[in-house]
Image 1 (cartoon, rainbow, N blue to C red):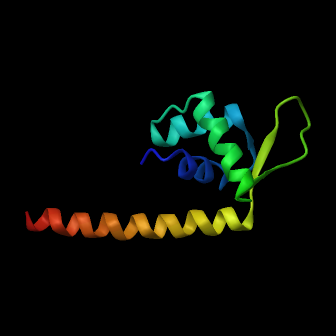
Image 2 (cartoon, rainbow, N blue to C red; image 1 turned 60 degrees about the horizontal axis):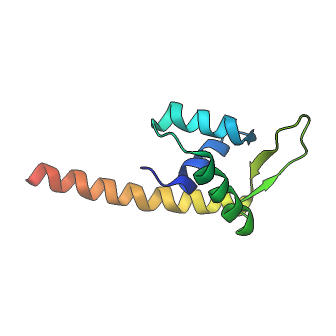
Length: 95
């Protein structure tokens, strides 16, 4: 899975993070390195959709948090992927 939106939402699912921390977390758990343009472009789109929002910064970097709408979207997408993976595994067994 390399969809930046889902990766960022998954990263924020365990707590608020700023951009660089999101990039590092995604690289750790998914093995995918998002470039700054990809990351911040996706963050902008997700803010516009109200899936994430900025929170009060205690330092120079701007942290983001997952909104209830973002949580619901992530859960919906994960359920969809789960069905796809289950189907693919069954079909592989038959092959």
